[in-house]
Length: 72
Image 1 (cartoon, helix red, strand yellow):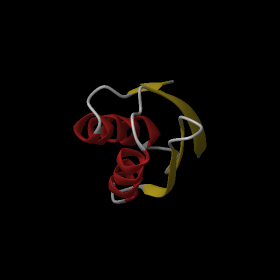
Image 2 (tube, rainbow, N blue to C red; image 1 turned 60 degrees about the vertical axis):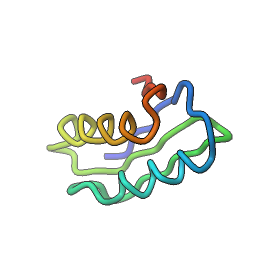
Image 3 (cartoon, rainbow, N blue to C red; image 1 turned 90 degrees about the horizontal axis):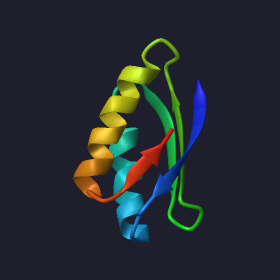
Image 4 (tube, helix red, strand yellow; image 1 turned 30 degrees about the horizontal axis):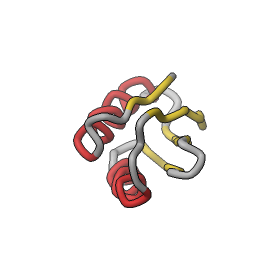
């Protein structure tokens, strides 16, 4: 399953790159792209565990950029 999300308050390209790298390491994620310029994130992950994986993605994003919110 592949879904796109809008990001709010992502402050820098370096943070976006860190988030993308960390998200790709999550078990079940097959691909991830975080765009600072577009303020968007694309996640491709296992269908059956997508909601569970998105909770981990949200935790990773909060750790890297506490002010950033994922709008679902």
